[in-house]
Image (cartoon, rainbow over all chains, first blue to last red; front, side, top):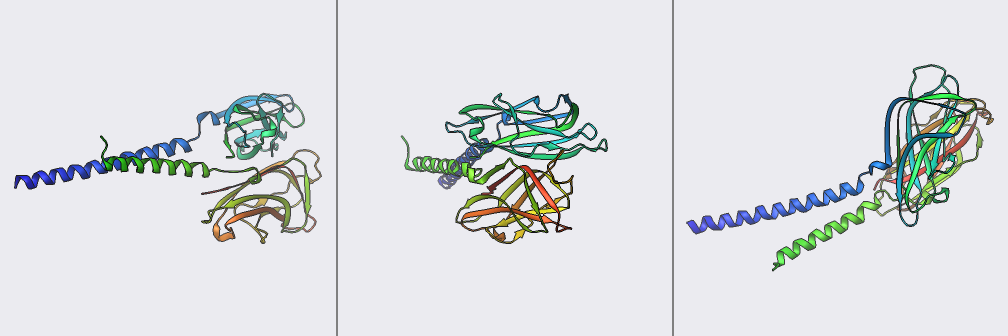
Length: 169
Length: 161
């Protein structure tokens, strides 16, 4: 009788050990997958305002930067900028990027038209594509928000904004 | 000394890890043909719907997966316009938000407005194994003389696999 119980106990321990190993392997795989899919913190930026950006007509740096690490052969970067902002009165504003401290450039759509009604903070999103020929290089690359008034000195107020980027492959 | 079962477990673990590393990069793989940036103005006139001459391509595996197409543009328009996609040369179809409100005179003077659209195309919408082409299309909603002037814009596509 006691031998029977001993055999049962051994058998249960084996099953428990197998399950524990399976769970550990599964956990490890999930952990690896999660870390691989996670966006590195330097690739994203979230700023809560309101932040008023005043200055001369376009273009100057907004001093908000993210960075991307490129492989040996740089690939295109897809950047998404989403803002809830309002330009001052009916003045149009432009937003773009400074890539690796070069000149402020537009890598796609960039207009925030003037809004006559005040306190109408509407979200607006832009997708910008930066190709390797735009000055990307192996290793760390910085992308800094820039822009300014389209026509004459004015202020834009961002209630909040996010800036994010991903490598195209 | 390792028993055969522990070796089996090690092999199983390694194969799962290898499989994981193979699958993860393809989840966000995009090549240059999947990305388009246009930086000169282009004007289009007429009722919906006709091609706006901008295309991106993506290659689908044997098990076709949904794709996401994103279009971000500056524009001026004299009429309300709608925008959509022609998938693999098919009819112009709306795959989500499509409306573009009038803004200024579509002559390129003064400021532009901007719009951002994200469209989801399902396998049942005409995706096929291999190369798939997505062409921007649309047109005026009310007037045959309506003009839309597309400014700087980007078009991108990525699979959801």
